[in-house]
Length: 294
Image (cartoon, rainbow, N blue to C red; front, side, top):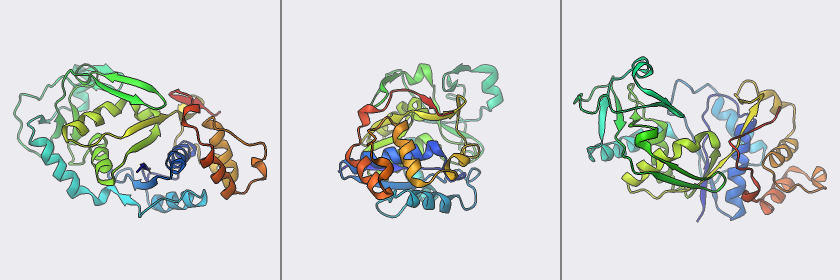
């Protein structure tokens, strides 16, 4: 069975880009009568804002985006993360790192997705310490991701990324690691998300292979931008509140290049959602990194 999900961070109200992802992932699941789960990515407490979770839930419900099963929270899964972290550590491919960002900026090469870490601390033999990060050692075997929208991505982690962090120096598990465990626990088969996460997907595939997890199918949709800049939760909120739910759905369907009936303006919200599910066509989405909506 198809199992998809929407995984917002509760750092503010949902913006247009977030709603695009929510609707795209929902339609892709419901087109094949699959499950659509809601996971709250609240592991980074510094980013969590009060009442954001309630705002997210209410916004989704107002758009007739109803999730299957009770929503899950990363903050409730710390024991599971620790369990799989220990499994990775047992492979003897992890090591502690005390490199600061300043040190990396002075000594590491800058790549397309941050500094390429060449293994400065790999042979230091640093002991387990709360103030040290933990890195995952990689190899030079290319990781190939076949995305249903963006096409094929082949990435040599050793050359293009370097050994990457799976646990930060404050004890917090990284996104790359935690999302893999989440997908395992939720039995996710398909992931529809923003193209800004496409380049990090090979790292997740690498971890999933090491842990012997099933690898989901990926679809990365173009991120929405305003004046060529990625939309933030502050500057785009006005776009949402000045439109009603029907208008938001029509706007999102147009953004995703989906079929729009001439009579859609006469439909109520439930009819629009049913129409969108019936006519959902992933192949019509443009294989772009971003689309500007200015």
